[in-house]
Length: 112
Length: 116
Image 1: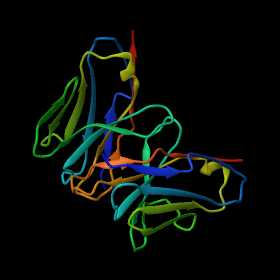
Image 2: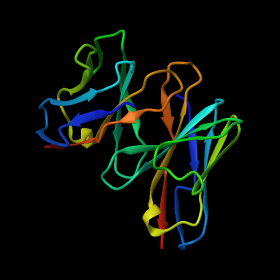
Image 3: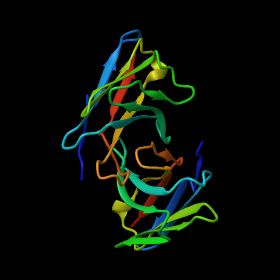
Image 4: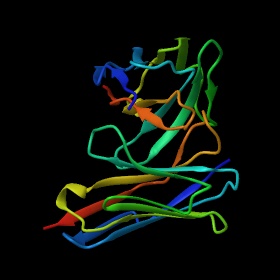
């Protein structure tokens, strides 16, 4: 089955800096890669996703890149703000209607 | 986006009792829902896939007799933790796939279970 590795487990940046979180996956059949932000005790919130027919996607300060050959995808947050502090999870799934397999998460701390 | 409601948000129970958690898709029909468990400071681990009108598919290592899943309608899936023990204390979250076919999953707010 699918296995998703995520790095780093913790990331501390200064306000205004960029943050990058990287994930690798094992199943070449995976074609959907969402990123979720989870605040303590709350539900995961989808912040951006990318599909296998796209190499990069951007939404304001957030961007995701995908390298299908290398089986890795990354989340980029620019101009970080304290409210970006949370746990971020990458995930992968192989087809519509199937479950997401999550990475172990990255705790991002943005200090002002 | 689609809304998934989960109830209760928090439950405390005595060891040996059973607890039922409900997951509802409020504004769409969900033929498939998923149940995850999340221990403190850990990731979401898939427990089972809940299929409307058929038996749930459980992940390896998840006891189907302990975690009973029922998906009797297109908008409701339930997870019953039977004979709960302290080690079952965790954050349980359900999700449902949006009906547009884009495979976007929407999560419930989660249920924090504490077994004394």
